[in-house]
Image (tube, rainbow, N blue to C red):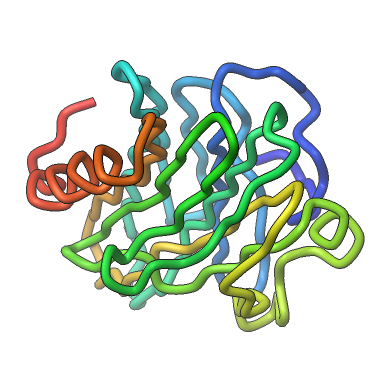
Length: 201
């Protein structure tokens, strides 16, 4: 993985995806390279990420294979921002278990699931604050700064978390839905949650 800080701007501005991901494990964190298919080896831990878009939805699907004899607790960290949206309100919706970015010209809904569990942690803040202070309250413990709401030029970071037993392989998936209305985004989000175990991307 590329060794980037958790708040450094992506090097490829205008890249077709607004969603990128990284992996936290045992006190360290790295972003995945921004490519459609990325395979990484960390000793006995193998991870693979696959990115794809279907109409108004962008996905990142993850496979993590624990070939060790120990239980591991990785955290998949996803980052979203819309470089074209200068004024927006972003917030976490407990009812939807999702993050909503509501702009003047667009709606974006962020979600994901691993083993039936949705977003675990989230950090929603202005871009300036993210790039200056980062998103981790404690990198050692994998704790994000708690921030449920932001206005202006906003950006969001969230995590999908699970425990993986020795010799076990798991899958997780994250998405961002772009739509004209919040209602449409919520309908698509509900459909994705119900189909998450069988999503083929």
